Image 1 (cartoon, helix red, strand yellow):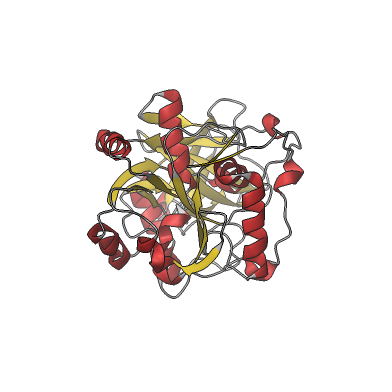
Image 2 (tube, one colour):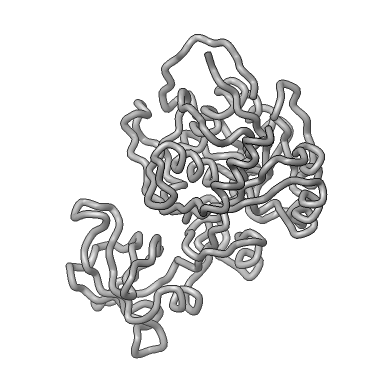
Length: 356
């Protein structure tokens, strides 16, 4: 862990803005998962690498922690009884064939109103009935009752919920590549994108080098793409996501720390999960953790992450982790050297830096 001396400063939203040429927003994945570029920013010397070089940068005895969430085909189209078109993005599955969803429609249906998704239950699709708002009556999400089991309905009728900055409709390629090779627990509407760079060959190579591996689950929500809108970042309200840190992973982290290894989080969702567990002393539950400069990290030593949206909470997280000036310098380097940005883009490797 590197320690730098610096006087504290107050950050505002504009500090996390930058100009990104639209051509650098990746619309498709690299031809090979591990063939993406890797910006090694783990020290003051910045090195341009290929992602498959990662085993040379992680040490035997270190612990890689992945988010094993699985992206579901959560985007589904339908219409109201009036014939008005609508779109649901199912954010969370609840017991009893109930779900929580975002709704895109010109006029919201009334409480108890029925929606006919993909033609409705009598035409090969299914029905959705509005039960209210979620998590309370002022919530931005909608609580719905479906006419059948939600995961089966999404798999049959849904579309891959690609991020808003990807212009094309989902394809068979997206169904495969907007998913990690080890995805296990269905529930995410966005991929843990840093983990998309790992293929089976790379995982085997890391294991052969003596690098340990563990998993957590955080079902990534659509809120991950929402920009912060308040200039005073402390006024921002974080979205809510469900997470779990299994007992085996807790033990693996303790063993890694005891032997002097480093905990390497694969993706910001893994960071949010591990630091939520450490901060709130809960192995599972909902988290709204908001990590900004000044945050005291308790678990994660190094981070593999993609490049993030301007003014986003994730820009704030990586700045908190590796130092604001260092991150902004890495982003300037990445833009100048035409790295590919966002979900299907390239990655970088960071080391935790504490500020005195």
